[in-house]
Image 1 (tube, helix red, strand yellow):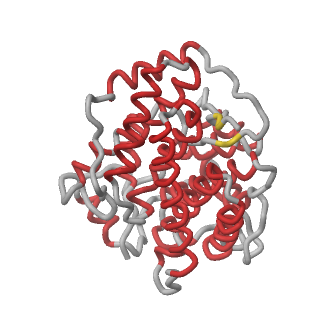
Image 2 (cartoon, one colour):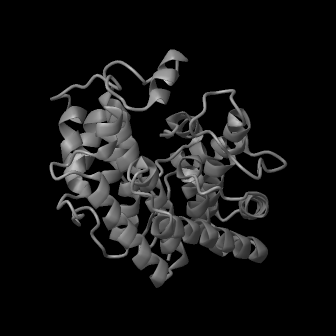
Length: 346
């Protein structure tokens, strides 16, 4: 079994400014960003924006270590993804033409250059591309708006077709965190395109994943496979993002049950005692995936030793927009955690 590669996620988080918890707010105006947040975004954009986009035709970090294959090139190229979101938020806050121009160029270059592999671990952070389009579509150049919409349609339809037609019951990648990231990208695409057919299919994929991944007691397949809370978090984060988008559309995906009778809320509640420090866990001791031991041997942090509850602060901050109980836990884990989702204007 190939494994997901949170090393790429860590690299992305290092250059992202705001939590990746975008949500469309149906019928609601977007609250103005505070001046300190705008200044923070401006600094990040000025640091990372380049004269030419970093677009390449393929990224690949899943299952590889730093400096293997195209890992380094992919990490460099992916710097454009959160940059798009940041530019969109700046345009939303200040409506500067130069921000719209830079964002239009990035969205267009990536839509023209990149060929989706439909590897959800490599592409999970393309949620920032979808966010950028959702936030700033009214400010985009017309050709950029059309190209971005086509690209998002390709992503959403492609991931849904994978889950509907390519499901392999004997392959864990169709029931573990890989599929959670497929569900996230399909759900965000369906929401931003406002396509009822895609949306219904994304909802079906979400419920199907719950039934295959979350046990009746709230534990997950990822915990069984990896013996690591690290992967529980990595599986639940994309599902919470999908639930945030659904909540904004008037649907409660937090407590909807899967075939097992369990839910996303049950999985978060299962993890909560570890996050609070009531229970502890030694990570990856009995993992069934050899790559976990290889990463530990290569010195990649986080693949042995006791799990750090603070690593779930982002997850519970995101979940806090769905249920205030999780917001309180996020504040315990990381005081000042931002539970407010990025606003998708309607």
